[in-house]
Length: 625
Image 1 (cartoon, rainbow, N blue to C red):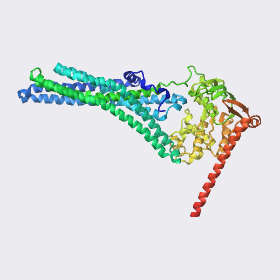
Image 2 (image 1 turned 60 degrees about the horizontal axis):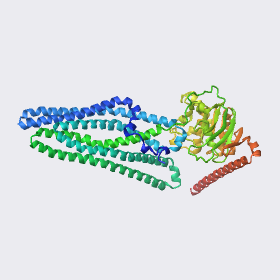
Image 3 (image 1 turned 90 degrees about the vertical axis):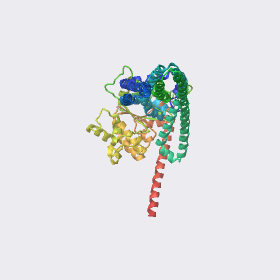
């Protein structure tokens, strides 16, 4: 899938190119004065260039025809002065338009990033990161270049061509008519070119996004590819996508070459016909040699504005596609928003309830039952609840409903009796913190990663240091003290420079540091060895004594942390009670716990085998020595 599945009709957008590009206006409004001044300077340069043939006409019909060389110098100085003025206007145009485009690009990029942060997790589940990256970088870069260069020249050159056509008619109506008639096919082909090129340009940008995704996935998954020796396989897939993009780019080049053929051929034909006609008119005395010379000088000035239409049109249509792609993200409806009249909880106690909660994914077939099909469960303030169930029973999804990463499709989730949908997302997420099994860290210092949820603290204050130390102690993450710069050490992208267990401990420390009323832990200890897990669990008991906690448990030892256990089965909570009670009353619970014990024994056996292998390798090395 190259982009959002609902945008497949984007090529057939009902918006015209002009109306699509008009949507940039709110972001470009502040830049318009300078862009307009840039247009004025560019137009002045074009008019100055069109003024030079008037002087050349006087020069040819005057001093050059009479042989009065004393009159030549004023014409030479006038042409020189106009040339310098034209260069000054071009430099002024560039000065006017250079900065505004960068401000527009920055504003649009900030708006895009803010929107990505605001959109729900379900949006990010469906979109490839490479597609979003290409929109944030290459598409917005194209829009900036079009505003600063393409739009200015397109408007100015079009006006220059119109004014120049009037000047051509001034020299002689027949010569002007020939030039104008031969320009008509260019404009006709331009409209045909728009329809064809817009589709190709959009496909090219989407394929570039797919290619960016392929690179990103290969870089993030480089350990897996190397471990399984699948580098060649990944390369073949990349080459296939790159070849598809190359083919599309060639198709684009052919389309551009088609319009360039007309843009180069027709003016040359017009020049030839005008030359033939002009010589005949000059021989009959209808125009002077100076007028004929000035006509061709004017036509030469118009040559670039006419020829530039090709690449300016292609740039405009590329920008239209980039604009469509940008607004695809901004126009995506946000299904998880703050309420119009939010409720606040003055004194949060931490009572978390699932009340006949239903959930199904947006793209689930109608005949498939809800993943969560009427979950009813209440966690009392300060209680620790373990959630167990077979793989795929919906445990992680249930925890995601607490902070509205997803919204319930039926029933409700409440905090102290208040529906979480009646709270602002910021307030809700201050009261409830999560730690995930798949621990994600950011390319920032250890300190910044752990204090991520404490925007109320100065990161370098004494209070922040105390919170940081406590969180590290509880998560058994004091290994960071041995890093090159301690807690100021910058972890690599996604924390991949650390082991899985180290990342999980830092993610757990981040959740603990938030000091929430409710702590939701989605199997955050799965990558820890048994000894470290025992230390973490012992430290967690101090935190959980005063915090409501919902813990997804994949190990029996994690279950032991809980005051009560909830069994999730077929989308419902079928049993709630103490671990010992459920072992006696629920056959399915015994089966689930047995499965967890088998998995724990497998992990322990693998750890022992690994330790023995390392010891054997050490003995072999020492014997060899």
